[in-house]
Image (tube, rainbow, N blue to C red; front, top):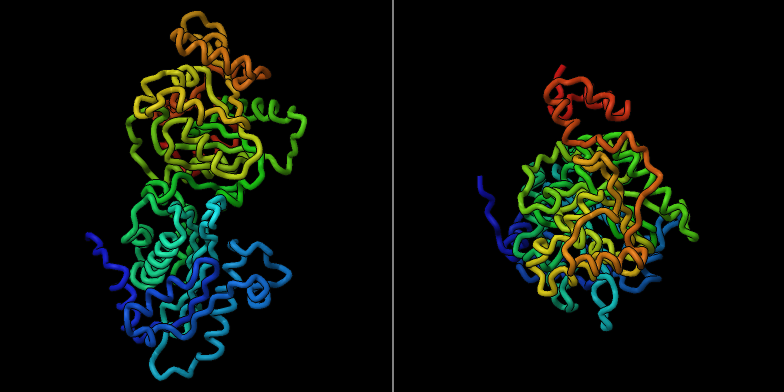
Length: 471
């Protein structure tokens, strides 16, 4: 059934006229835009018990900070404390004292909107703790947003809309997670904001797979990428990447093979030789794109299949990124948008040759030069994993690729500037292993595939019947 999209005002009015919903609004940083939408809709006395804006940091600390909570004001920890404090106070004051049956809620946001110099990162945490049934334990939904508009008033307007969308979705779309997600962007165009993370939990939301929701954020075009830490937990990218060194290896990992493991180990070994390397501040990612690499064709997207691959990679101790990027320069540009230190992209020599194909950059006014300006910022290097030449049987390195003369000049410059480096300490016996080959053997019941992947991966595939495996 097609979902009806209501205006922001009608959503707020619908909640105002619902005599069972009653709550508080606590908003920091972007003004009181969400509560304002409810006041402007009319009938707000039926919904709003209190509004507060602890804009001063000292007031915010007094109300919402304790020794266990982060001192960062725009953080998930601060939002969680705001929701806990406001909800507990609301229920403590009004529980059992309302004449009509009441489902209480607390809405909160802590946001950094654009400053007058326009040099800060505009983002925020937004959440709602709410009852679906009277006197039940509350459910909770938290999202993180990145604001793209370059004007403070426009960002405030966006916050008001997404806040109303969130509260409305909590009461009217809680039983349909994908509709819930899509409704958060009602009356908003995708260029206004990204929703980079969502977390839903509570007695009526226990059925929700938050990792599946994360993949659907990318699938629905609501964000460019999502990240899982090595323990399989969804993380907000800006928090995870802050001041980190990043090593990213793109692949299908369907499944990860001994070759993939060798690529990760050998490329990380190069990174460790950097003089300022620090294990505590270095993250490696296996990046899975929703698209075929450097292809205009879109994969048939099966969210559960992506999560199966995430599980396998997490089991191997890897952080995982799922993105909607096709071209490598867009992947690099994404990382460059965060405050990271060094970036290293791992690529196979055959794929490197494709990266220098000008036909992939015809959509850019500056063509290949524009793309490569984004692909090779100052903090970026590319590590190249060799391959076996099918005709000669010899190992091909970065110096063995064939390029047109105009591209060759640019390539030689990048080589001489050490922006492209060969991965040398490899296990040559793994060079002939490819994920598509292993996948084909799995589906054809050719048991030889088991020798091409780590034991943990083979056992997981067989026990969970992954990738079309059958006994």
